[in-house]
Length: 315
Image (cartoon, rainbow, N blue to C red):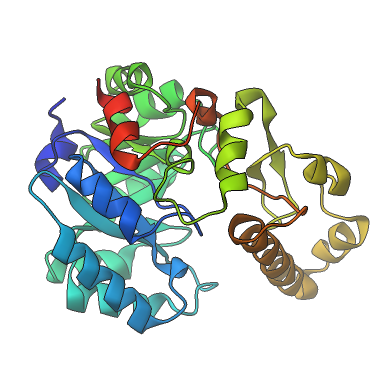
């Protein structure tokens, strides 16, 4: 399973353990590296820059040959911590950065100066071409089977399109729950895959056992889109609580969203409320279960160590 991704990051297998808000942590990524894949954590999982710095140092200490680690940065103006996070990553060092939701231009400049690779989330050819021109080392093709905020094109359509049109490697994100899925993505032209949801039900994941067990008990048919978290469609498990609150924005939010001067503030408030609800569901015992996941939980049958999940993905 040697590809351009394994060459870029010196991996045993062409897999990135995807960055998952509230879920990813040092323990998960350390085990991922020991298993021969890369692991990534959202920088926003750390409330302070000192906590982020400590996580980087812990990952550097646990890094082994055949593994790699990186961090995900939200690079638009909504992330007021972005510049400080980028500075810390470049000072301390990591193998790669994944950018999301904005222009990666500044990240690419600073990261490359520090010897760090930059991969960029994209959902279409237009933006993929832009990040390639800016110097991205790879494009992460977020398709319509990804968990959380997903793209619109199928894994086959998006991966085929980008792999033919780009000169940088394409990493397929979404729809991978077993080795057959990985083989399929590579056959479409991908140089690697980004896998998230199957790792939620890992022993090392820092979420409640209820969340992990939900990924075992529910399947692909139970994944639905909701606008009630961030105001942007996001995939969640269709729990009784999600059914109760509905998946569409309220009539008053819809009305306010039509007002140009208020739209930004409404989105910020909705995002804040949604993230708090998601955090409570992930970290505490609560009946308000808003659990983010993708359809690839179809293959999750029990809670397992990261090393075993990687083994199932590669053999």
